[in-house]
Image (cartoon, rainbow, N blue to C red; front, side):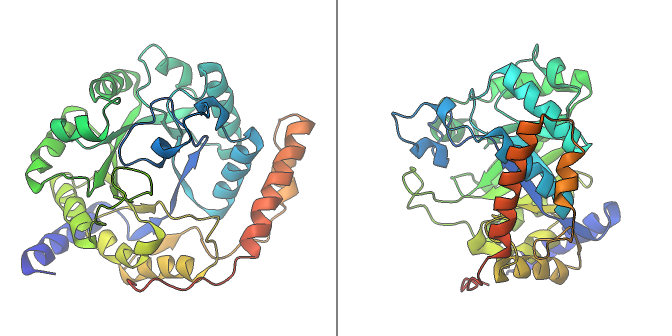
Length: 342
């Protein structure tokens, strides 16, 4: 690490500690589908789904979604946002899910389902704390290439309407798609213009079948640079760093650069493995206490957690089956070798 970046990260680290406690956590993005009616964002695995499969046929079951929220609540995972493909659920279906989720979590959640039309926002208002714009990049020319069917303007209208309703605003930004350091001012101006409360800063994952399949993975220094710059420019901004399982060794640096929390880790698939243990260790290396757990299942009356809900008996039974399916897999996880980058 060169001296300029070291100084930048050190400055950001001190600013973080001036504005937040020395803790961190895992934030789970709960997906409701694996398809999207847009399906042409260049970085996204949803763009690789079979052309003959309708996005509405890629929905997860209600019991699977709700079981995951029960897990997250009881393992101390924050909900990064509830998300999935654009146009997969009708407003009625989405509202019913949000109502059920609120009963489980007892807390409103972030919602990321594309640009929500301003007239629809009041309908979701009782269940959500804020909306997330999957903006990905703010460079207008790059955005046209990466997200040809997902322009920024509808998100800007959503942010403006959300502000009027008192909803929080969050956005996403992916490092490694072609943005330049000179684009930082564009990003800072966007955050200021829409009073963004939270930003999710991911490193590009070159998913097979996408246009970025052969793209280089951004270094931890690149991702840390963007995080540190935003921490310095916006000392109280909530910043989440996204790391894939091949980059667990990056977590300590990204937290020192000023990130609040960690996401993108496949928490159920990798629960209790050496990778999960390393993620928690990385938090400690950054001087952060890790809230929640990715390594130890609590001794909990899971049946009791389900029974206290007001759902129908049939739905409770389905949730129970799916929840124990998750728990069984998590208990049986075999050790996974740590990647060489750690």
